[in-house]
Amino acid sequence: MSAFDATVGHAVPKRVGRGQGSPGPHHTAADAADALLFKRIVVGYGFWIFLLSDIVMFSAFFAAYAVLVGATAGGPSGQELFNLDKVALETAFLLLSSFTCGLAMIGARTHQSFWFYGGMAATFILGAAFLTIEIREFTGMIALGAGPTRSAFLSAFFTLVGCHGLHVTIGLLWLLTMMAQVFAKGYRDDILRRVLCFSLFWHALDIIWVALFTVVYLMGVAQ
Image 1 (cartoon, rainbow, N blue to C red):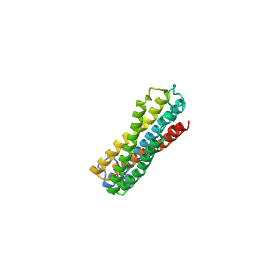
Image 2: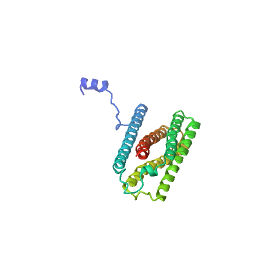
Image 3: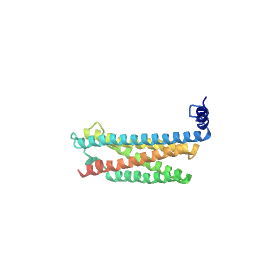
Image 4: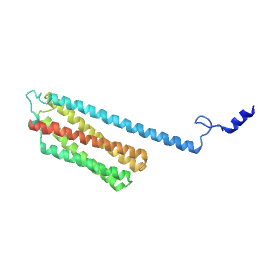
């Protein structure tokens, strides 16, 4: 070995990579932080894609309803079937549940169990009340012979409103799961991310319902 080679060999120490030897504590912490950051990005991006796909689906249902709203086939129209008092009560329950969901989210971020569990319980009760009124509306319409097979208008109505009700049902089951996970595992970062995703999902349902209330019920009664 020449003097130059020996000098270079001593001057440039051998660097241990990820695949060479055992990484030190600094490398382990850095790798864990990178993996956690990557997971957060993937989860956030994937959930926003899910919400956008849901909005696209509801947009298609809204478009179908707008086309078929006048296709009653001699059957009842929205003006004859819709009860705005009950629908307004539904709307109040769902919008209020969005507020209590926000309180629960604040409680989760600050690790205050009273606000988290109280807000989630109130959100569940209000969401269940919303579903109860909607189910009674559906059963009442079917009892009058205005089921989804009566006309194209009613098929579009039951599909659009029923799909939103199905999402609310899934949201309530998700809510109970989040309460159980926080109770069992505490306010871990991964669980808080899931609670945040649930909160975004629930608020998105409120926005969709406001559009549904306006397009289906208010405009339907006005016609």
